[in-house]
Structures are given as structure tokens and as C-alpha cells.
Length: 401
Image (tube, rainbow, N blue to C red):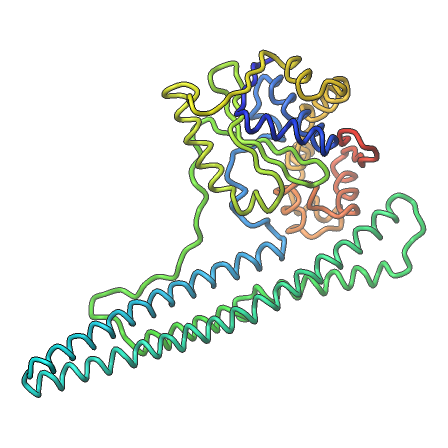
């Protein structure tokens, strides 16, 4: 089946530039798009998923989860700062009221009551300001500690992966491999300790209690709830997300079949940082554009690139790589997921973990996030247990599957 293909001119320029600057990456993206265009059911491909996962921290990655914990506490600090600002406004209002009554020569009892109120608001503001300052200092220290721990973990992980890759490919064993694994696990544990609620959140919770004690809420008024994590937006009906993952760079394209027989590309997210920081916004904007296209047709103020069939797509963006792109598209179309392989063999996660020698949580994380998050020895172990074939990229062309 060969659908038509259309995209915004901006997305077309991005793909053309990618083909010039990073041909291997562009080849993987082109093969993934070709696999989707020619698929009878794009939603059934392993490389196509429901959008929204970009907004969540990567499961079982201690770097992502410690960053997420820090972000939640930063939101709590912002809540305290808003309370400081409210307290300052109340203090200024009390000062103005007191000054006005004094200038008008009001009854001494009224002036005394206003002076007491002004002093109370001033004390409350000062208490909250001290709490805010203390939390800021705690967060600054936590941020320094987490960034240092993340850097050590990343370095230890890279060192271990290189050593394991050499060993897996039959190279000379690294005499320090055991120490590299120990360093990796120590760095990982340090990050997990940092995200432990007892390390950081208890400090902020205790500070919050002091803040509330300085100014108890009025009777019948509930205490403000701590900020809750923002959930990913509900994607527009029919909106899908293509994961083109050349060498772990994580490129995601939001698309839909609209109208029937036409694959419409709506937005692209290039790289893990873009996925994490702009995923929610991209899903919302792509959904808005898709809704507008369905209701009113292609927007007049957005330039369009329209391609009649897969051959025209290849001729425009990959005129010299037609055959290799088609071969890679066939591989991507035939790929299955680890979870499907496991289901086909009627194995549970616990059974796969036992047979592979990996922890069950690690098996679950790799199933969720793909082999790009796995160490080489983990990928080899899972391939053996599940009866899969594992190929490593070796050349400048599209990545082999």
C-alpha cells in the first residue's frame, strides 16, 4: 500500500537539511517514514506508538527520576514564594490602614488594634521569607549534589559500556571490568539515594510545617495541597507518534492519516532534551493543527510539501539511497517488540529475568523504553532468552536492525 505523503514546508526543510548534514540519521528517519507510508496499519508497527510518553521521566533511569524529584520540589518552593508575596501584600495593606487611621486621629483602641495587626502580618511575612530562603538553600545544595552524581554516573556508565562492548565483540578482556561495574553500581546507588524522600523532601516538608504554624489557616479553609505532577495532554483522535531512533538519538514525528490515504506529518521532536522539554507542547500543537485540517482543510498560512507516492518521497529526499532505504524500511516493518517476543514464548517478566540474569525491574524498563537504553550485555542476554537476532551498526549508512 502506498499512501500519499504531505508535511509542513518547515518539516520538509528539516528533513532535507538532515539528509545533507547527517545522512545516516536521515536514512533511518526516511526508512521509518517509508515503513509507515507503505504499511496497511501503521498503528500496528513497533516504531509507532500513542503520543504522550515524551512527557514522563524515563523509567528506571536514576538521572531522569532525580531530576523529576528536583522539579517537584522546585514547584513547591514556587508555592511558598507565592505565599510570601501574599503575606507582603497583607502587610502593606495593614500598614496603609494604620497610617490612614493615625492621620485621621482615630480612637486609640482602633489604632492599637491596627498596630497589632500590622505587627502580626510583618512577623508572618518574615517567617515565610526565612522558610523560603531555607528551602532555596536546601534546593541549591541538592541541585549541586544531583548534578555531580549524574556526571559521575554518566561517566561510569560510558566506561562500563565501552568495556562490555569490547568484551562482547571478542576483544581483549578489560582487567578492570569488575571495578568498572562496581563504580557504575555505586554511582547508580548514589543517585537513587538522592531521590529518596528521606534525603530531600523531609526537609521541605518540615519547613512547610513551620510555615503553616506561623499562620494557621482560617477555620473551615483547607490547607493548600502540594503541587501535583502535570499529566500529558490527551492527544487528538488519530494522532500517532513515529519513533525513529538512529544510534539512540531519539527522533519522534507526530503524524496522522488525514485524509484517508494520506500520511500527514505534523511536528518533529529531535533529541532526548526536545522530547522531554517540548513533548507536551508539540502534542498539543500537532493536535490543534490536525483538528484544523479536519475541519477546514490545510491552513492557508502554512506552506505544504505534498508527495504523490513513496517513490516521489524517495526521489526528493534520498535520490542516491533508494535501495538501502527500502531494505531498511522492510526491516523496520517486520520488527517486533521485546514484549511481543516474550508473549510469543509465553514467558513472564520474572521468567525472562531469571533466564537472562537481569533484575525484573531492569527487564521491565528495557521493554518499556527499548534496547537503546540497554547495556550491550543486557541486549545480548535478552536476545538469547527470546530467540532474537541482534545486529550492531557498523557503517555510515542506515542503521541495521
